[in-house]
Length: 139
Image 1: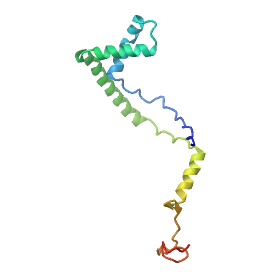
Image 2: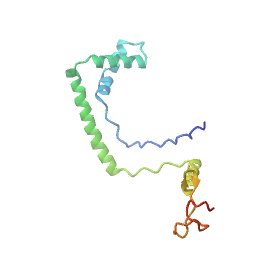
Image 3: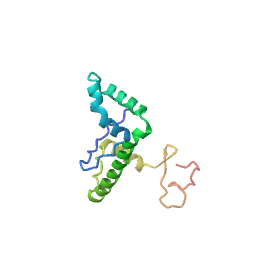
Image 4: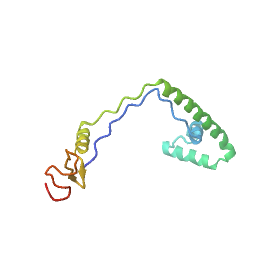
């Protein structure tokens, strides 16, 4: 089985606005340091589980403030993206992988029908180059 070629990393625009944070992420950022102090031996994964449990145990009334922040962050992101789209130049096209380009060009330049090459009809009269009707068995 042949492996696919390596994907070419497209550099990220440093001026691209940060995506909006979800309500849970807002909560997580606010509480992470406190949870870290309460559980000094816990690793990143364990801290995430504790934060997730706390979020699940919260009432929807307690979560409301984080959903408000999420909506505010979405509005900020939308405004920044609108500005970014108006002021940024279009991204440069991704660099082509020369090997893949040659394969694709070869496939495109050889039209096929059912795996066999299609014969050209130079006159446009429906007859193949040997002057027989298509499918009549002639060359």
